[in-house]
Image (tube, rainbow, N blue to C red):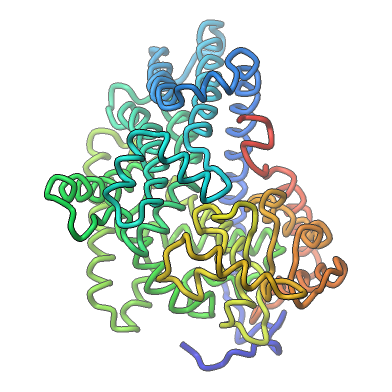
Length: 501
């Protein structure tokens, strides 16, 4: 780690010679990110419209009465609908095949509604505890976990399992995979990524499924099985590599705090540039399938044990892909490229949490990290990201107190604090790409800006410029602006924005 903290002189200024393949890498990255955003847009609207239509036939209250039963039945139903065509691709000249695909989209729409209802989180801690007490499975876990409120993660863990297992079965079996299966698996995989990130993030810091010290053997064995299943089975089904996230996040990201040596650093990227986002996403995607950034870092830091665990996880994942490819190359390729394109999700989260940087002190958490406020618990601790970086070993339920204490200052929090109910990760990325600083400022507070939206907007503009890299000019800048406006228009804020709940 470098001792230099003040990079003010390097804002918008390239350090050293330019990377010779920069244009090629940017082009490839922009194509990959364009494909990712296009796929997300496609799935969103093709699911949202049927979902809204089904809400008039099957109201939300009906799903709420037995949300688990609805989730199980719709998940299995989607897997069943994928098997209604006899060939790999439907015949669009045949009205029957067209109707079957429409039925699949309606099935996915109803499934998404059931998933969102089942995994919905109350906004307060009291609401979380009451919700846990109202569900038998979570109530049992609340009695055997050291922190009873952690039982709320079982909701996500179980919901994601029910969602992904049926479509994974029809994807893995060579005689059942077809175009409908690819559609269904991809849609489910996109749906569960952010919720899976929430539970995984907390799990890597303190092991959610650890039993109480005095737990009897039966409870210990159940929790041990749950932990093994989550870390290995559900992880792989969700296109994640065992131990990859834990080691990268704990032993790289939290050590470097988005500094220049962080494998996910946003410093050298223009956070308002779609082309720069694409380069970051491509780099993250390549690292997600190879560890080419994390492995050298662990070697330089002498982290031998972590390196062995990291390499073991990659070996397990590739062994799984190779075995799967022997009898079903389509499924193996889909999982591989899903993880590669998943660099875009990684980058969206990185820009969302570390997209504004005070170049005068790049390691200062208050200056390089953002907080988001909507619910008391902050999306189970994820949204109080400043407090998490300052005290990563603390339980997620304690960050609210720290956030309230910091926000009690006359002019607010030292860091940027955004209203998450108005600005979601995708909405924030879209606003950056469109360089809509005023829109971001309307929903943001920071002590340095007081309550003046114009000052806050200027702070956002100043703190999203690249550090140690030159900004685009001329034709590349104009092309970037066009791409940014298109991408900013294409991203959607949330499933809830179209009434899927």
